[in-house]
Amino acid sequence: MSSPEPDVTCVGIDLGTTHSLVSVFRDGKPNLIPNSHGAVLTPSVVGVLPTGEVIVGQSAKELRVTDPEACLSCFKRFMGQDRRFRLRDKEFTPHELSSIVLRSLREDASNHLGVPITDAVITVPAYFNDHARQATRLAGEMAGLNVRRMINEPTAAALVYGFHDRSEEKNITIIDLGGGTFDVTVMEVFESTLEIRSTAGESMLGGEDFTDRIVADILAREKLQLEYCELNAPLRVARLRGECEIAKRLLAREQSATIRIPDNQGHFDQSAPTYELSRPSFATISESLFERVAAPIARALRDADLKPDEIDEVILVGGATRMQSFQAFVENFFGKPATLRFNPDEVVALGASIQAALIQKDAAVDDMMMTDVCPFTLGVEVSKELGGQHHGGYFSPVLHRNSTIPISREETFYTVAANQPSVVIRVFQGDARKTADNTLLGELEVSQLPSGPAGSPLMIRFTYDISGVLEVEAYAPGGTKYRTVLTNHIKNLSHRSIDEAKQRIESLKFYPRENLANLQLARYAERMLGELPPWQREQLDQAIDAYEAAMNRANRDEFQVAREMLLSCLASFGLEPEEDEP
Image (cartoon, rainbow, N blue to C red; front, top):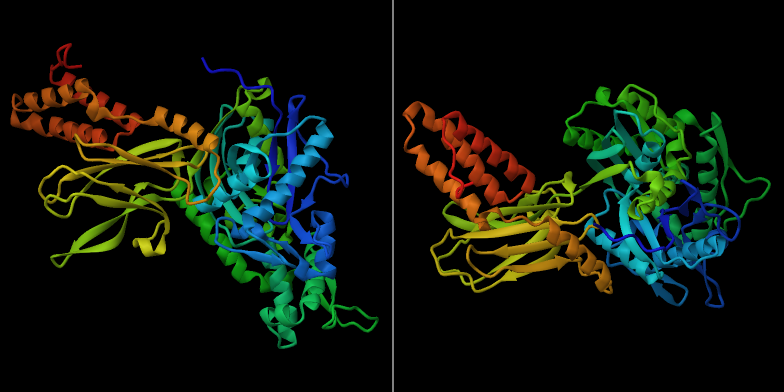
């Protein structure tokens, strides 16, 4: 029996590129929490005043127009990267900037609810890599939060729709275009269960890019480049970007919008030139961005083994999906209009608080279940024998992208030299054939390998937890087991978070080759193989091969299926293992 959850208020936070929100599950439903200005949307902007005071939210957003070099936005795009940003005489990393926004949200929630807030569920783009996820967790902990779970943004949105449509059975695709990131998730909904089938996306594509296209198009008419103007006329670009952002939003309701063009000092006078932007012209200058949107959607559908016409409902999430040209693109791709039943700016935050309710076993959601997937392929670096020589730098997957998590899987690799004393296992994330094109997550050194010929087996197991923690374990049969938990070199990750993940990981592990009964069944089947006539041997031989392969991969569900198939095959020939060989 699991212990009851402590009586602690756990909030849900949508840490967005342009805006962030916080919500709480109360009175049987998710509720948004207003900030100190009474608004539910808090701009994800951090600024530094001449006095050195750090400001966040709406006041920092206003500073971006008058003093753009003293504030920062869109830093979410750089989470997990080794970047530093200077604001006046202060330097910040992306996760430090995010922690400032999160602390502001935590304080708003504490003031509104009248209780201290220490626990939170934080949403992340589905296609955030492990570095970015761990940086987000660190930002939460720096803001004084115990991050109970990080949940993918499209999954959070799906929880809201699933919460209101629990009796539905359908395939849905959630398209999440926020200010700076783009995700697409394909899932199946049935019997109050949300099962993620696949996810894809791009972490450097969002509504800000559509705004930048308008800015770049206007500057190009004056034979100027956006990058040049940002360096030499930052106030002009800041004011023009504000005008273009207003025009982009206006086009969601109107057929055209007028954009005023400021001078080099960022001023508008009565004779300031204007530019008329129509919906068709906006769609034209955005064509290359729509091509980038189409690729992840197609990949997610392929991974889910579904065609566009097999999707029953397309749900749009993120404020940028209000663009009429984007909605027209989605309708053309799927052959049906998309759904916008809930506010696309708010639905992710609401879903985060539903996830918090699931964690705390709230009675209002006790009939809901959700599965998620690992968005990236995880594997190790191997060498290949080409032309009689070994060449390193090749990628061999252990966990494939869109595998349902939590998951534990084991693969067998082999030494390249006789009496090889040790090996360094380099762990990568990605889908490229060569490791140079993937992301290095960490290393594990395995020493004191048993003496043996080249080609001696080495077992490598990956266990991936729902919190995004990856444990790597390696051992030679009969040898010492070596393991490490990869947190991607993000410093200050709390020991409590890692320890909790380790406990969950231990419950996932499965070692069928270390079970005597499993080995006895394999030996019995091999012995009976010699007793069968030739025309029956092939069927049993195939069942034994499948059983052996399942033992090597050490996946619990796969092994149980293979074991039942072997027992069924033996029974069809009138063979039954003795009780000491079950």
